[in-house]
Image 1 (cartoon, rainbow, N blue to C red):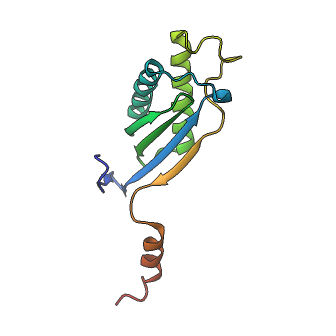
Image 2: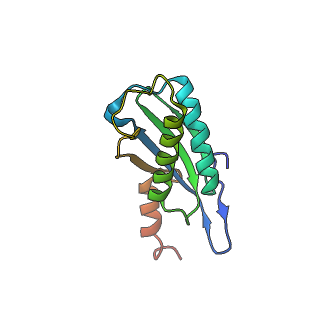
Image 3: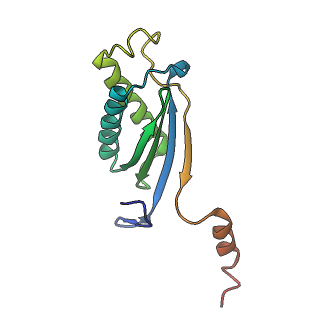
Length: 138
């Protein structure tokens, strides 16, 4: 998928689902260096692949990351987010990078919260009008 309006097709479904995710580090610690960012991206791409999803875009600052993910309708978004955050946190912890070590108490890397915004397709007002006009159209 290249971000245009391509649709996924399955046996009984046609879909185009995209989500913009934002994860912040625990206590908003600024530990995401270029090296950490690169490891996170690799981890996120692998998790997306495992979920038959695609990481379309990734970047962020020193205390947060943004992901644009295309995913199939069979994937529960909360499950995808749980795996993205869990797998990436374990990977970063296992690397014992100096920019991360000693910055957190316990094993958490990410804040428990996240932001998820659906995106793509037509603006909502156009979709609302389309639905409202269904019986009016001959």
